[in-house]
Image 1 (cartoon, rainbow, N blue to C red):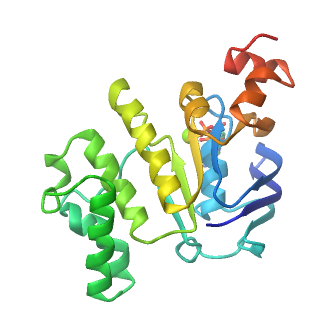
Image 2: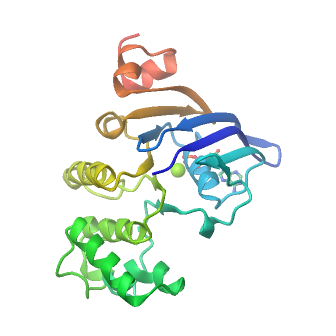
Length: 238
Ligand code: ADP
Ligand code: MG
């Protein structure tokens, strides 16, 4: 579990300011959905937290520790993308264990971690398959497995369900939320789907043009929208 704090985080590409200044506090164990229209800066924010994108100004802290200049591989965060980005030539087992093998972890530990993830993600019997022989939902779960085996402090999801069909998306939503609870993880889940956010989140942060318009529980946002944007986005009465 980890507590994440963003202090006055800014992102600009040259003259283009994508995120003017964001302050954000995410509590240990929270599941926060980051919602907003396309181009509002959701992915940029997530990538800055993960260290995949430099920040123009400000500080990213995990459990109080300044992570701003820490290498992505040393940040102890697991990121799941929309495109599962699995290695096509590797089996499920090898995809899942890749990061641990790169870190030269003990083979016994690797085996245990993979077995644990396979069990949690309901992938038993598929360990020797390659991604091409899996369904979309199964691939998505393997991508989750690649994160879980590292036991990261923080999970970062960037629209991981948007390539799945509607029925599978609903099922996977519940699976991810259940997994978060079971692992006692802290998660940020980016989506542009308000229903997804309303059903999954402890709190929702609503982003527009790189600014947090409102952050609160689904009920708070729905019943007490503080501005037209929030009201409009969640479809609640003004
Ligand atoms: P979202 O994930 O909410 O759809 P993004 O974080 O991908 O939004 O993008 C936010 C804004 O930043 C967009 O206007 C996008 O064009 C811009 N942007 C993203 N990456 C770059 C880049 N490498 N150079 C310039 N502008 C970028
Ligand atoms: Mg995005």
